[in-house]
Length: 152
Ligand SMILES: [Zn+2]
Image (spheres, helix red, strand yellow):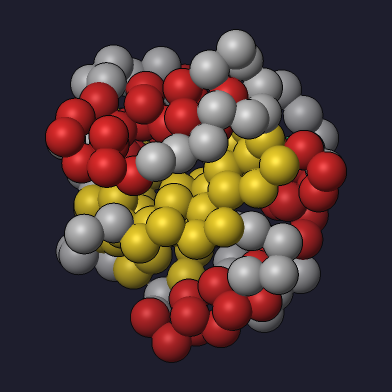
């Protein structure tokens, strides 16, 4: 995965990112303190922020290369395939702002309350999308404010 990462040319600016993960079959996954959760087959959109020194590139390096399970998303990520990375600079607000925007899409639902949102007041930072055409329409709506990377 490291070679793939170096070809992605991710920015070092600070901002927010969104991981699009695909789960091909329904799974029971133990997610840290949230315990054992059921995930239906489909797409999962996870929003996070990258405000550290390495910016977006540094944060995504963790997601693309580390096997550590620290954040809620690390547990889901270990069972799913990362398909796309969306990202945008801080001028569009923080991760909670992005999660609020996503919560307004009828194509998306909240699979597990509290996922990725231990430290804020959002319902969750994880969204579920059952099928590809719905995902495409959300992506199209986000293209004005976000950069979209589709992984090979
Ligand atoms: Zn939040």
